[in-house]
Image 1 (tube, helix red, strand yellow):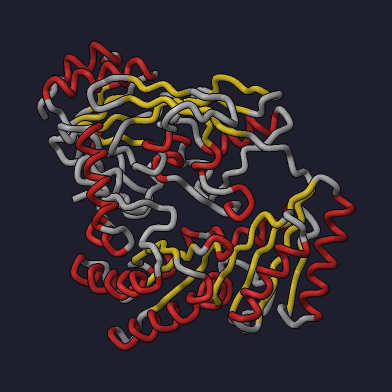
Image 2: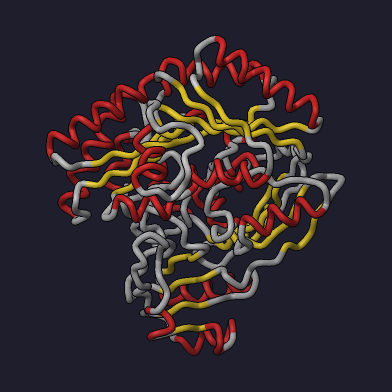
Length: 460
C-alpha cells in the first residue's frame, strides 16, 4: 500500500482503521464468503472524512475499493493487498424526511430496510424492494442501479434518486442534493454515479423520492399452463388492475419444484406439475375495491385459461409464505451447490426459446446439469442458476459463453440489475457497442485519471 496508516488514523480515529486479522475476518460477498484481502479497511463517519481520506489517497496514488452491504454477486467488492477499502458502515444516518415534499435524505451506508421503515413511520413509502433489504445499503443500491420486485410499477433505483453527494477520486465533493422533482438546469450530474459501481466517485449521501402509501396489498400465486399463457397473463393483469400491478414475479417449474418438492424447504401452495408459477401483487389504497378488482382479474384470467390454479393470500403470514419461496436464495444456493448465478435481460417474447436452448446445451455438455430460472418478467429480467458439479474458472467460462453469447443476437444484456464488477467485464461488449465502451473509458479518464476508484471493475 502506498498510503500510511498513520495518516488514515489521524482522519478517522485509530479505532476505525482495521488491519491484519480484523480485515481478513471480513468477507467480500455473501455467497462465496471469501475473506477480504485488502491492505487495510478505513471507516469514515461522514462525507468530510471520506473526502479527506480520498485527498490523502490521491496524493500518493493509493487505489481504493468501496464497501457497502456486500450483497453483490459480481465480485465488485474484491480488493487486493495493495488496495485500501473504504467502508461506509458508519454512514447510516437518516438525516431528514420532508413529508410535504415527499423526500428522505440519507447517508449512503443506511440499509434499505431502515429507509423503508423510516418512510413508513411518517405515512409514506420508499418503493424499492429486494430480498437483501436487511443488508444491502442505499449507496450500493445507487451504485448498481438496483431493481427488485417493484420495478414494474416504480422503476429502478435511478427513478428513486432526486439528488446525491459524491466524493471524487481527488477528494473533491460534488454535492447535488436536489430535492425537486423537476430541475433541468444543465447536466443532471447525479446520473454519472448511479449504476457506475463506484468507479467514478463514492456516493456518501442521497435525497430519495418517497411515494404515497399503498396500505391495501393483495397477493396471489398462480400457475400457468404455457409460456403463451404467462405472457398473456402479464398483459391481462396490467390492464385489469389499472396501474395497480405492483409485482409479477415468475418462477419456472425447475425453481418452484426444487424449493418445495425436492428440498422440502416450503410447503407447495399449488401442485408442482405446472410449467410456470407467478406471484402477483396488487397495490392500492382502498382495501375493498382493491380486493374485488384483484379477485375479478384472477377470475377472468381463469376463465380465459391464462391460469389453471391459484391461491390468494388471506393474511400477512400467508403472503410472507408465498414470497418466501421466491426469495429463498439461500435454499437455492445450498440446493444447487456449487452454483453459478447470472442475471440477464432480454425481450420477453424470446425468453422460453432462450431458456429451452440453454438447458439443452447444458445437458448435452454435462448430463447431470441443472438449470433453475426465476425473474421479474415484467421488466425482462431473468435470474439464472446453473449447477454442473463444478464452479472452477474454466467451467465458469464455458457456462458463461452458453448464457451470454445468445444475448447479442437477441438484443439482451448480460446484466439486468447486478452490475458488471469483475465477473462480467469480459462480456460487456456483448451488450454495449464499441462507441459506448469508448465513451465509458473517456468518462473514467476524466473523473478518475489515476484509476484509483474500484480499478479494474466494469472496464478493462
